[in-house]
Length: 84
Image 1 (cartoon, one colour):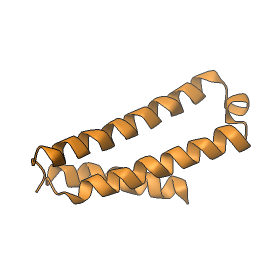
Image 2 (cartoon, helix red, strand yellow; image 1 turned 120 degrees about the vertical axis):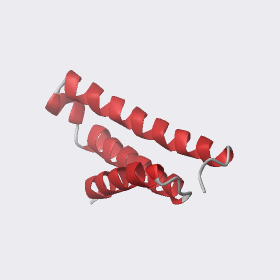
Image 3 (tube, helix red, strand yellow; image 1 turned 180 degrees about the horizontal axis):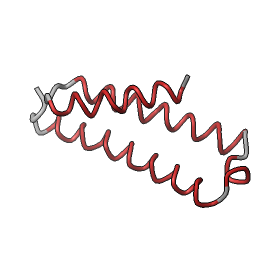
């Protein structure tokens, strides 16, 4: 369920950013939180690092960082009043 929320909100937030709507900030936040929870569950409880190896785990961490960066970028655009 977290994966589905992350994928849908990630795609939706990218599309909404094209229309410059303020709603994109909340949707990007939901996507970032769901990805963080998914990564936390995977790494802490399911030993994802051991199961999939270093490269895949670092790739997932990179995607997590990019997702949070996108959220902070959208928040910055809202503060600058670029988003309507």
